[in-house]
Figure 1 (cartoon, helix red, strand yellow):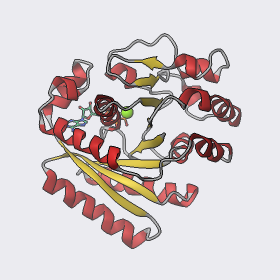
Figure 2 (cartoon, protein in one colour):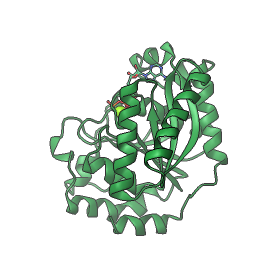
Figure 3 (tube, rainbow, N blue to C red):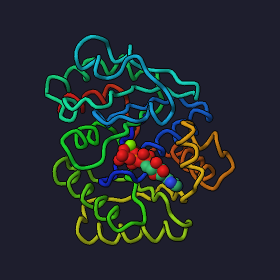
Figure 4 (cartoon, rainbow, N blue to C red):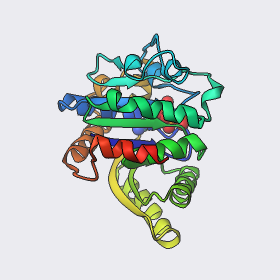
Amino acid sequence: MKSFSIASGKGGVGKTSFVINLAYALAQLNQRVLIFDADLGLANVDIMLGFAPKFDIRYVLNGVLSLKDVILKTDYGFSLIPAGSGASELTHLSNQQKLLLRAQMEEAFSDYDYLFFDISAGISDNVLFFSQLADERIVLVTPEPTSMADAYAYLKVAYKNSKIRDFHIVVNMAKDVGEGKKIYSQLLYVTEKFLPETRLIYLGVLPYDECVKKAIKLQMPYLKYCENSRVSVAIKEIAYKLLNYKGKGVELERFLERFSTL
Ligand SMILES: Nc1ncnc2c1ncn2[C@@H]1O[C@H](COP(=O)(O)OP(=O)(O)OP(=O)(O)O)[C@@H](O)[C@H]1O
Ligand SMILES: [Mg+2]
């Protein structure tokens, strides 16, 4: 199993739409994929897909159901652990809740090839917790200077607080690949200068495309709604890249071992 956290620092840069479409693309490549909606309190993976799950992570954290019980198998070929929206008590997980999750993860995750944590914006305790939990991090950035600044802030805090060094970078909402690569180079320049211990890995560029907004309104993946659009071609390229990326995919046991030390 390979696990990735999707972070950005700044909100609204496209993390949730990225993770949904990446999961769908990998499912089409016969991969078993699970999305963990870790934007606890402001969850919206389910809303973006038009699901109304009966159960969500709150049932697990309150000790009513097990993690495996709340996994929703979707028609898109991937599964989802939904989080409840508007549950302010989830914006900061207690140590006991973290332990509760740990106790149930082996059973819940063992059937999957890929696990994606869609984490919230910002640099809160939950963000750092889920960032550290995954084997690898994917950071989304857009060409806006505020997004660049917040992505850098995330990289800095993730390194300083959690000693995370490697980050995959995706530039979203770029005019074209050229602009996306320029943004990546700028981020690389700043991190090489001020955070030389970290390593950025270029993962890809997703263009700005109106069909993303239309697909969200229709509550479906853009990869289904506009399969041949530039953005869909680009997300499929990223899915292929991940499939061929050997990376640090770790055994579930080691994943759980690391979790127990958080
Ligand atoms: N490639 C794209 N082209 C055009 N619009 C996009 C693209 N990606 C995302 N968007 C727009 O950005 C909005 C925010 O996307 P999304 O909800 O996925 O971001 P997020 O980072 O998960 O936000 P939050 O931080 O609130 O969780 C979407 O509603 C969509 O309109
Ligand atoms: Mg989101």
